[in-house]
Length: 122
Image (cartoon, rainbow, N blue to C red; front, side):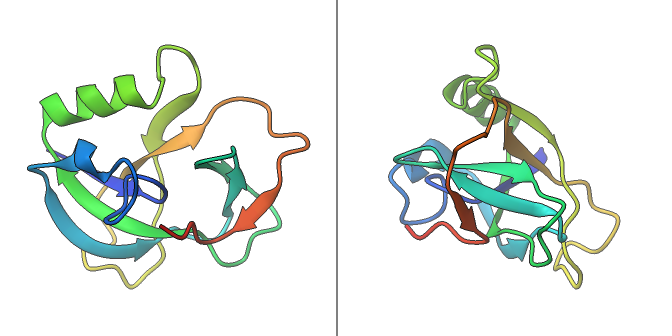
């Protein structure tokens, strides 16, 4: 099982939430400062931001290996659209400070993309 931080269309109520069917919702969460969302049109991308002081809001999910493999394909890992990696969460966090959490980072150039700030509304 992998703990996954989702921040866009995979969140509850989001247009792609069905991809998390059968997985366990763990609760709301926020990343540590240093991350922001950029607009990719109909969906956001999460990127590092040295200017950010808030972090990004989202949800934590416990996902099994088959779901994670499906999400990697859906998120375009092999096309280098996104990359999955660990991300620190703001504290306090219901998981505790030692729990590793992964998310999908946007992996392509972001020049000219509008910054959305900390929250993607579904």
